[in-house]
Amino acid sequence: MNTASHHDDLPLSVARLAASVVGVGTRRHRSSGVVWRQGVLVSSASALWRVSTVALTLPDGEEVQGQVRGIDGTTDLAAVQFDSGAVPMAERTTAAAARVGDFVFAVGREPSGLTQASFGHIGMTGGEWRTWRGGRVEQLIRLDGGLYPGLAGAPVADASGAVLGVASDAFSRHYGVVLPPSTVDRVLDQLLVHGRVQHGYLGIAAQAARAVVEGSPMAGLLVSSLAEDGPAARGGLLVGDVIVQVGDEPVSSLDALRDRLQVGAQVRLSVVRGGQPYALTLDVAQRPVGRCG
Image (cartoon, rainbow, N blue to C red; front, side):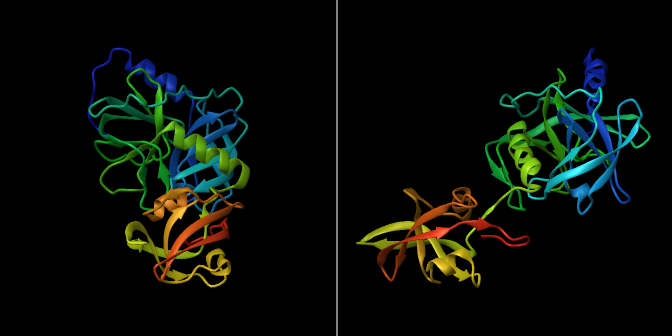
């Protein structure tokens, strides 16, 4: 983000948003955060990996300690709790009207307490997407360039100063993205309760395939391997089975399958085995760290 824009009230918009922006520092990284809820700021998971406390610089220059409540590397979001005092929550928008070419700006805070701002435009918009780490993001808002150092985790706002989301540079070397409020709220809810986002796990590897049932072709997922003693293996799923439905919904991709897995619940799978239909009920577990499927 480096393109200037001419708005007479832009300095006021920057200053208003900066009142909710906190500098976030560890021994190895510096980033920014925005007060999303009272006493809770949202920042970049990449900058806070494997730390439990962080040094925070408030808008008035005061330095305080923050407690990392949880991180989610799949969406690059982290939750930090602190004594917010008079630091207000940022004004947000749904980002539904974000358009390619719209002017936006990001506001961060240096460890010295100085405000840092960067200006640019939205380079691409779209619907729901997946990060390369597997995180679900409800809306694509891509910036037209990268982020300056220290702006990961910073709020990104439209010309009026309303926050469109939180900036991340974790998913591309060439451009930043904005994680919209719907994603931030969903992830934050889980981080504050569980310390991480719960991802359903069956313990399978699978690929798109087609099965024939009673002469009719059906799209599905061919199971190529099973984790030893995983939920799928314990529930009777076999390598070579083709999963064609989860509950009453067809499934033809791993993302579609994962979206239907709720930790702690049971899931009913319709599979094709040797050309014959079978039904299995599996217990959904919490995905172990470093695993997928």
